[in-house]
Amino acid sequence: MKKILVTGASNGIGLALTKKLLAEDLEVIAITRSGEIADLMNDNLTIIKGDISNEASINEVVENLKKQSSKLDYLVNNAGVGVDLSEEVPTGDLMRASFDTNTIGTVLFTEAMLPYLNDGSHVLFLSTAMALLRNVGPSAPAYRMSKAALNVYTVMLSQRLAGQNIIVTALHPGWVQTRMGGKTAPVTIEDSVNGIYKAIVENKQTGKFWNVDTAKVEAY
Image 1 (cartoon, rainbow, N blue to C red):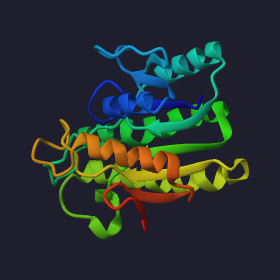
Image 2: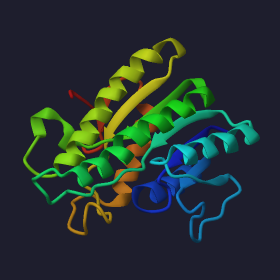
Image 3: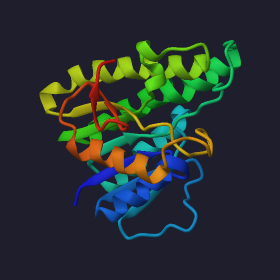
């Protein structure tokens, strides 16, 4: 049975993806800040408490994986924040909050997970098409920049891990009906998660940007 780790698994896309993966008979390690997922129990689900914006918490997740002797076939970096989506002027607080989770925390968590990846595994980062240069607008400066930096890391990491045949993918999950995306967003969580799952199992082009809306890779 393939094993997959998902961060930010307690709500929104992360929770829906966790349920989808369990339905597809994968063994799921779910990372949540509380160490719990309400009303979800499954023999193939392990929930670990972890906050990727906190290095001590990342180390605790690593210790948990050591105890389980866990090796991963897939790593989905879903945890993220969008604290300035309706803002146009960047501030120090908004920049720090965005980069701490979306970039720094995600990068450090991924680096900590590298020893636990099987050769031929797949690392995915939930990014956004808003961070692509051709789509840049005046709003959400901290969110866009933090995700743009994550896209750069995706390409860099793909080159580092090429010798291990590890695929690294940044992906746009769509504008989704979540707490962040809002109720009027055009993409349902179910459709987004189905598209993410397709990227997980089908994309073989490392270092690329996968758009769930089109189900294919696109230029950065």
